[in-house]
Structures are given as structure tokens and as C-alpha cells.
Length: 479
Image (cartoon, rainbow, N blue to C red):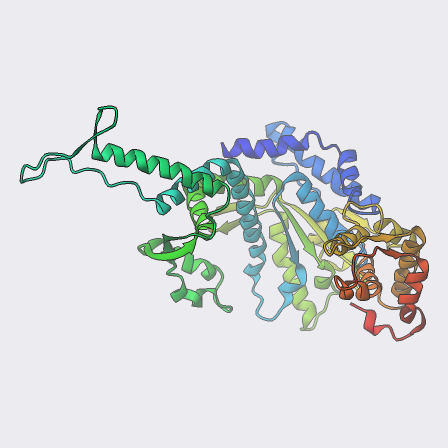
């Protein structure tokens, strides 16, 4: 079953040809055709490897990629959208964090453990979606039992004093035991309560439920920094061996539903299947995005200092990227076929400053282009989640319509490009700075200003961003 689910994910890749992958990425990311083409080929090759003869399948290594380009040009977004497109486990790791004080070599393996956790969450969410209707039905029945407990069952034997059972004669002359009559009344009341619950009229009614009392609070020391690698799971492992304590709490029906739904999911979902499926998906489809890899690159130094630390991080990354077995709390994970996408601006260093062994594990290098004024116009109009559409949705929440004219968008793009050219170039992120300054008064005055539509044209942009255009000291507008 788990293997079949992973095969289903791989089967979805069959319809994703490289051209279709690029077309899908074009919906969210403007330009950078070379980078999109490289990641599309790398993704398609994962499906192709699964269709290769078994004898050669294990020998086909993934095409790890280095994306080279300044900040804000879409490097991270390309990798993130790629993972969402395929349903692949994905994590983003800042390579520079491995050079922080207190770093130890085995911390590098933590990114594989994080990838396994991401896959577990992904697979469990899929399984929960599959059994959601059944779980909700069970929760409804449990809540009804709490609101209206069933009548007590009659004693199996006659009373010791020989008192006979009580019978009730109905209007039609039928004779019914008292317990049967109580059961019918209970069923009628229960049906009424169920209808009220389905109509949402009982959500604030209070019920008493049993919840598990966490015993992990006494072991918070295991979660604190400075503990050896693996100690972070100590409290969880210890909690499994301690007896489960229960405590009763009075909560609303709405809160009880959340607690009981988690319990029903635990009963309906086989955790071992989830783990097996998730680890299989990590090994076949996992994507690790190594950002800021240029921060651990540097010229060789024969002296001590940060260069030695950076080279040490590279050597610790090497076996993970080459392919090794990493122990996680769910079992061993092989990284031989995990796809690594690295990215960096490489302003100070260059890819050749990485140690040769690590360079060899990233055979595909793509240079992303800096964004131009024309790109900014496209970014604000073409993507499905364009910035202009986002702000229009925010303003619409207060009942006001926000529209941008073509010349208004062009003026915003010109201003953003101008600020990037005069100060630090932060790419498309500059649009957020400019748009926030442009619409600051509008967002502040809502909803008191009324529902009069807001139209942003070139004149409005020039008037409101006049300070940016004239003031050489732009520090106020720098992220």
C-alpha cells in the first residue's frame, strides 16, 4: 500500500513534461527561462529513472543544480513551486546557519531529518483527507453520546427480593418493557440533537471530555539548546514508555470536536504505513533547497578563521549530497536520489571557490538574470498571485475597490527599478517596499474613509512616492 501511494505520485509526473512544468512555473514566476528549463529537466528525470531498467536505475544520479543570481530574482520560489507541483517533500535550509557558533558536524544531517518530518506531515495529511468523512461521522456520534448518554442497560437477573419487572401498557394494548420505552425516547431525543448539531446550534454547548495529560513538561531540558544530537527526541521516546494519564476537561462542543477528531484520525490511520510511505517518498522524490551556499564558499586559507569553518561545513555537506544513510527517529533514510538545489548570489565568492568534491556534486549551474523595469511590470500583472491582486484583495476586505492603471503600474515599476539601481538591489522584494509606501495612507484610513473606489494612476504614484524620487537618503525605504 505505501509503495503504491508513492507510485501514484510518480505516475502524476508522467503527464508533466518539461514544457508543461515550465508553463506551470510561468504562472507564478516571471522570466528566468534557463532556470525553469533546468529544474524541469531534473524533475522529469526522476520519473524517467523509475522507468529505467532495474539494473541501471540505482546508478542514475540526480542532476543537482546551483542557481546563481542576486537576491529577489526567484531562486527560492522556483524550488518551492516545483515541490508543490509534484507533491514532493521539500525543505529550505540556510547553509550559512551551519557556520554559527556551536555548530557541530552532525547538525548537517538535521536537514534530512527535517525532510523526513515534512514527508510524514504530508503523507498524514493525505491520509486524513481520505478518511475525513468517516472520522467526522464518528466524532458526531461521540459528541452526541456526551450530550445525551445512552440509557443504562437493565440488570441481567431479577432482583433478589423477587420484585417483577415493570411493564407499560400502550394505548393500543401492547405491552412494552420500561427499558425499551426509554430507549425509544432516547433515540427520538438523540435524532433531534443530531439535527441541531448539524445546523451548528450546539457548538457553544459545554461537554466534559477526557484528554491525555502531557507528561513531557517535566522533560523540557531535552528540548533546550546545547544538548547532544538526538537528545531532542528524548522526551518523546520517554513519553511512550510512561503510563498514559487522563484528565477530564469541560470544553465547548467546537473545542471537543477538534480533540476528538485527532483521536479518530489516530485510530483510522496506520502510523507505520504513514512512516513507510513517507520515507519511500523522501528517497525517491525529496527536494532539499540549500540557500546562501555562497556564504560557505571562500578562497582557501592556510590560516585559521572563518574560511576553515566554511570549508569544514562543505566537507560535512559532501557525504549527504553524494549519498549516504542518515538515521532518523523513523528509520534510516538514503540520500542517494534526493534532489539538491543550491542557490546563492555569489557577489563576493564564486562557485569555483567551493571545494572540488562539492562542485562535482552540482553539475548543473544556471545563472539567473537581474530583474529589469519591464520585468517588474510583468510581476505586478501576470502571475496569479500578483502583488496588485494581493493588495486589491486586502482593500476589498473593507468593502473598497482598488484598481491600478497601466501607467500607474509602469510608474511603480520605474520607481522600484530606480531605487534598486541607486541602493542595494534586492530584486522583486523592492516592489513590496514601494507598494507599502504607496498605499500606506489608504490602508490606514480604511474603513473610516468609506467605500469610495481607489484608483492608482501615474500621477498618484508620483505624488505619493515623491520623497523616494527626490531624496538621496533612501534608508527609510530599504528593507
